[in-house]
Image 1 (cartoon, rainbow, N blue to C red):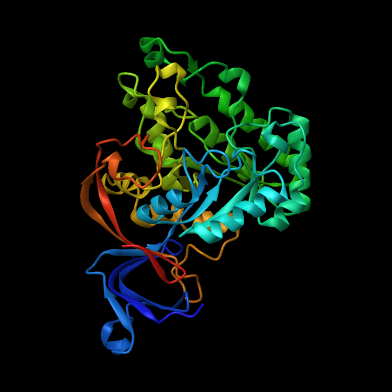
Image 2 (tube, rainbow, N blue to C red):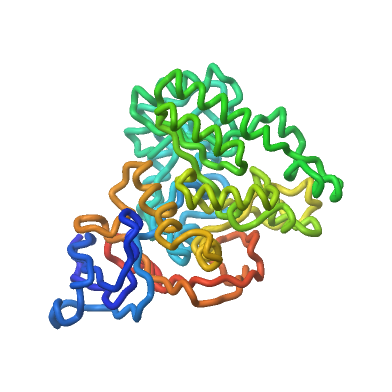
Length: 429
């Protein structure tokens, strides 16, 4: 569709690809970036083009969130395409990768087609389904990757369920290589994790809660890296939470394997002590780790060891969270707070703004093979405008997500999204 040209001027442009930032503007024509740079000004454009004066606010590519739970189909009480879309737009997220653990799972072409059509008709942002790696997410039989890819699947994963059978995982990686498909896996050894509900250590002992050791993650991840070496497949570790995992990923990269990794914004900005007096909104999977681990993850982000930041948005209703900690479901919402929480690291001087935005925009786009995530001529005009300094207090009642289980309940954050644009059209202001 053709739209009237519009320009964002007097903005602080941040290009996550080059790492450069400076004053300038962006000209949008027919949903694409036609021009960008310091020369895009009101005087240069003329009076026939509509302009928005950003007054020095940051303008960057829209965020790409590679891990979001959307309840449709089967769990609309927790989240819907409409509610997730509104939450994403309010948080500056313009592209969402949807996890396959719906009901039924995204493991056949009919369900994928249903979701794609629903998202097209009801979504304000872009929705990309991640198809199930195994049928029913049971980890026993590989899904039809070729057909699912043709139906619109952007990648293949197993939701929150790790594939424990090494032979099944090997076959899945082999097939994914043949289709040049990306496998996105959450590595956790179910036997080592057992009935654990938080990070194993002194704090868990004091609370009287069963712990999950770091090794539950790295044992499974190390196995996956060896299978990737055998098959030559492309692999993305969706959630890493320990230095042990970063070491395994680094070794695989040094050996020339096509691997990448992501971390949730919660593990970059919170630690196990934030659980405090059994706060179930902070029961996550993988669990929040020790402060030393959190700092190591931040350093890994700054150095490039970590590729992607995700919200790991997972709405849980009241019945699943207002129970004793050990009985509560894991998960937290995060679409609307991911950027502001990440800016904590920028304000603390731990990472630069371009590095933070690269992990939320251009790097996910590179891994997924998307044209978005760039401030460049010809790129889709998925853009956000935000003030990184504007303070606010997180009020769960004002969040757009259907569930309100935010780990940043009443937290003081900085960074307000003022406008979100998808394909040149504002979807949030």
